Image 1 (cartoon, rainbow, N blue to C red):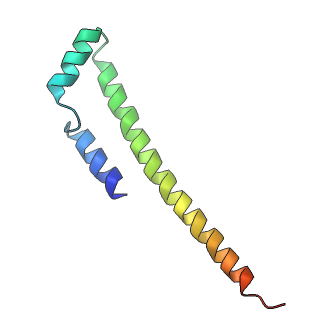
Image 2 (image 1 turned 180 degrees about the vertical axis):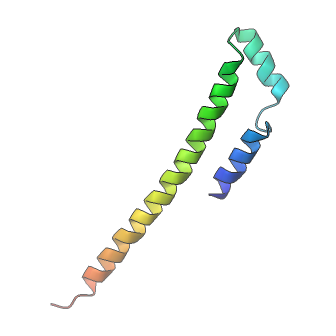
Length: 76
């Protein structure tokens, strides 16, 4: 979660890549300026999605371990 928060903060404040570098690359490739913004949004959604999935996976594993521990403590 800490990585996701830090990465999203850096992405939102344009500290991941130098804005001049981005403008140069977009200018050299001849793509519309909105492409950079769209890629930023997709990158942010990907970072947030991975963080959410990691949280959900952790809860699922904890619940599974709790169920297995409860079953193994049952005496026949």
